[in-house]
Amino acid sequence: MKISLETIDRETVGNGNEINWGKFSTLYSVQGLDDGLKVTTDLNELAEFVHNSWIIGVNHLWELLENGYTVKGGYTQAKRLSHVGMCTPYEWLTREDQLKDIYTIKNILNKKDWRKLGGNFYEKEFTKYNIGW
Image (cartoon, rainbow, N blue to C red; front, side):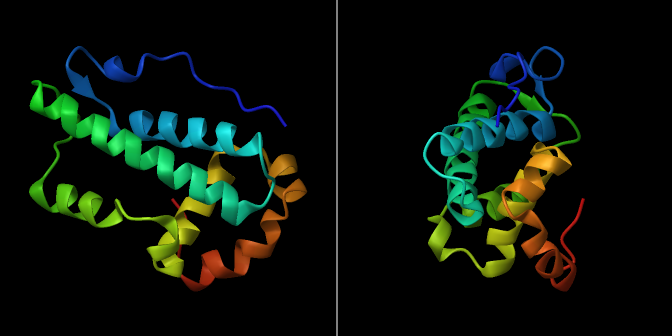
């Protein structure tokens, strides 16, 4: 299974000093999945790789914000606090938040690879927690 990493410099996603957070964070999630697939195909373990890489991305975002970058659409104090709350070990997350990391994997993979990893097993939980974007 090959993950296509976008060739966008992480610091310049967006225009100039404006960061497109969706694309920026996705780059980190893709990197985490790519790293994880080198050692496992278990979706919960892969989600932990994605989560840990996302934390690195959030910390990078904060560093960039301190250096004059902005986030397209804004980055409120409430959003920052929600990110702070998510910067915790994967096993400490609620099941709902763990499922969000697994759902991120679903969005990165094509349908065939998602099914190959057993992703259909999680579909009922996605529905239960109303996870889907």
